[in-house]
Image (cartoon, rainbow, N blue to C red; front, side, top):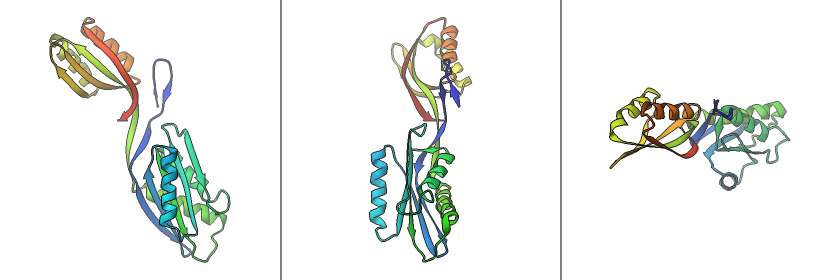
Length: 216
């Protein structure tokens, strides 16, 4: 978890890049988990509806989704299973994984044998865990996109400072002056700005462009 100078906390998270499917069989009941990236509640609902149409002949299509870097939006549905045996356990798996902007639908084809409350919870959560193990994720960290403007005499000093902090240059423009765009981790941002000003004897322009999560 990163903090800025105002002690504001920014929690890292995993962003779902590519979804996956997994299937298990419990007492002849088939449980098929489909995981997909989503960026909004509307997109998640559309995905759930899509799965319900695809598996229209299944007994249940239970669902859960988590949206936002801090899990601002969470929803789950048991879709006819006993309350608390499907959607909520699925949601708990998603929240526990640290993955955000993610939706999952678990389709159940009933095999004729009742699994009981504990059996259902294990089956629904278990198949979600198996699907998540097959997904692709990317670690996201909070930072500041910064434009640095300087003259040619101080470029070397700036490049050295950036390299020492493992901060890569997103873009650079060499004209009358030099402009570089970088993303600095939020916990290093203020110290970086101070160091750049001191190293160049204040012959540097610093413009904060935006604050954002980025691929760490």
